[in-house]
Amino acid sequence: MKVLISGAGLVGCHTANELVQGGHEVWFYDLNPNTKYVEAIAGKKGVKVIQGDLLDLPNLIRAMKEAKPAVVVHTAGFIGGQVSRPPYRGIQTNIMGSTNIFEASQLTGVKRVVHVSTFGVYDWEHISRGPVKENFPCWGDSFYHATKIANELLIGAYGGYYNFETVVIRPASVYGPGHYRGGSGGGRNMDDLARTCLGEGPILIYEKRVGANDFVYAKDIGRGVALGCTVKEATGKTFNIGSGDVYTPDDFFNVLRKLLPKREISIVKDVGGGIEGHSRIKLDITQSKRVLGYSPKYPLVKGFRDYLDVLRGVDLGSIR
Image (tube, rainbow, N blue to C red; front, side, top):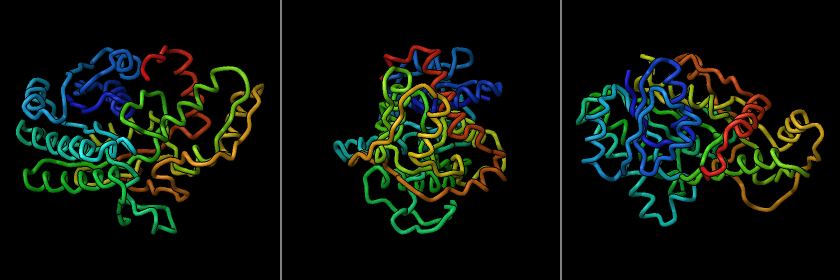
């Protein structure tokens, strides 16, 4: 099967790796693809890259006609505070860019569109108990969350009107080796911590920057999105993809003590710098397990160990 992925970043490349391992062919559509990063994470075999802008609908249609994908995975767009710098640009890219993906898909006969949203769409200010299921209320008072909610509504409308299959994936706070050009504050904080671990001297875990959250490793997200591409029963459904746990700065402290026993490690009670989508409530991943056959394989200690191994083994220094 051929799959076109918009966005050659953290989620897109780990999804591509999973798909290629399953025997599928992947095409990336990205405004400014980093070939070195794509090759390091997604691999070279079974992967092709087309450079293009989400806002260029004619070029997007040409790309889909060339790739002839059965499935399109939409990951591209701005994340977090990047959407509001300035808002008009962020809204154009995230909403009109997504509209172009959906429009090009229906015009070129794509069978299924998998839209990667975020767990940030939930109305966290008014959720006091979990686990948080996919039918919980959504609300966003930031431009980022507003665009993500709008896109979920749009893909539902497009799929119903043009009769193509739709799947929505809501990832938790994703961490792993990436370039974070889209603006993921949480991912960059984790990357800063991982790179500190590779150096020398004391390791400081900043309490507010880490927060307490469902941190899910990139390889788990890649597998979850890939299952959304291939599982027949997934159509028309929304899926939380996370670790199923909430990890705190204390958990990171214990993990790093285990992985790096000779290093000095401490927790710093810093001010500000918290992660968008910050949550102390577990996501419910029951539906992902039941329908997709997804289960997280990378608890925090295994995920962070793999993260450090990847950074040690591949020179990704220039991707940031």
